[in-house]
Image (cartoon, rainbow, N blue to C red; front, side, top):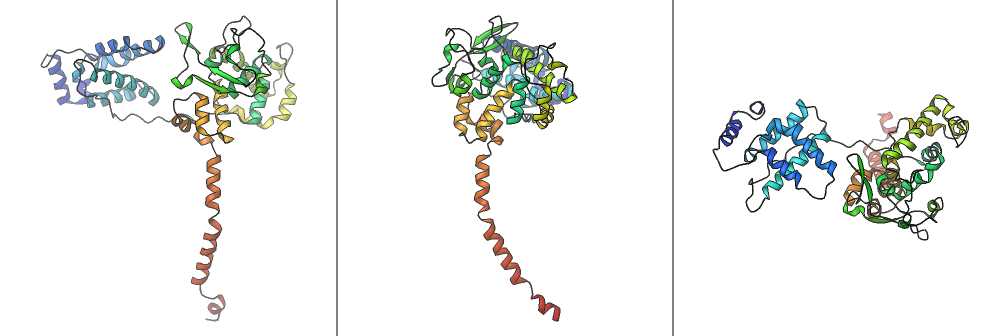
Length: 381
C-alpha cells in the first residue's frame, strides 16, 4: 500500500529503516500511543477517540514504520488515503491530521533527545473545509419557537439565548452563580460526557470562565429564592439538564409541533397531548411567515447561543465585548463565525462611500455632455 502512495524511492528508505539501517527507533504507532496516554488536560472520551484514530486510520497505513521514516510525502499520502480510500470528509481529515501533527511535534520536542529532527506534518495541504453557515432566529421566529416549547422549558431557553452560554454551561449553573440585583452570571463549569457518565469540568476554553450580564427581565422568570447550592435548572427529579436531555425533552417536541403546524395537524396541541400553550390556529394566523421560514432552518439547542451572539453584533455591541461574553478564545473566532452578522460597520461604510457618489456622477455627466456633439448641429449636418 505504501509503495503505491509514495513511490519506490521513499519505500526503499522505509525498508532501510525497518531493517535497522539507522539508529534505534520506535514505530509511529508506538510513539502516538505513548503520546496519547500521557496527554493531560483532555477528557477521557477524547483520549479514546485518539486511540481510535491510531487503531483505525494509522496502524495499517504507516503505524508500523519507524517514526524517523515518516516524511512529508508519507504524510501527504496518508491524507490522500483518508480522503479517497476511506472517504473521510474534509473536517474529519482535519481532526485526524491535527492529532498526528501534534504527536509529531511532541516527538520533535522530546527531551533529552528528539525522536525526529522536524515535524513532517507541518505545512501539509489539507482538503478545504468550509463550516456550514449557522442558522439563527429572527425576532418573530424566536417568539414562535418559544411558544412551541412546553412552558417549563421557556425560561431556560430564553436564558440560554440572552446569556449566549453553551447548553452544558447553562445546565451546570447553581442559583448562587446568579446575582439577582445586577444580572451578572458567573460561568465557570460545564457538564461534559465521560463515556456513559457525566463529568463536571471547566468550560470549553480558558476564556470560557467568565461573567456575563443577562437582562433582569429574564431573571424575573426564574426562582432565585432557593438555596444557593441548588441547580439553577434541573429535571423534575432534581438532576442536571444536559444538552442531550434538553434536545430530547424540550427541543424535539417543539420541532414536532412546528412540523405539525405546517401540515395543519393540531393533534400535538390538544389536552390529550398535554399541551398547555397557545392555540395552534392563533399561532398560524400570527406567525404564518415564521412557520415557513423555520421549516428550512437547522435548529438545535446551540441555535440559542448562536442567536444571542448574532443579535448582539447586529445591534452594535462591540465585537470584543461579545467575544468575551461568549467565552471565545479570541476575537478572531467571533469574527470568523459570526462577523457576517455584524452589519452596523458595513452599513456605515456604505454611507461613507455613498456621500461621494453624487459628485462623481455629476462629473461624469458633465464630461459626457462635453464630449458629445450638439444635437442640433448633428441634425443639420
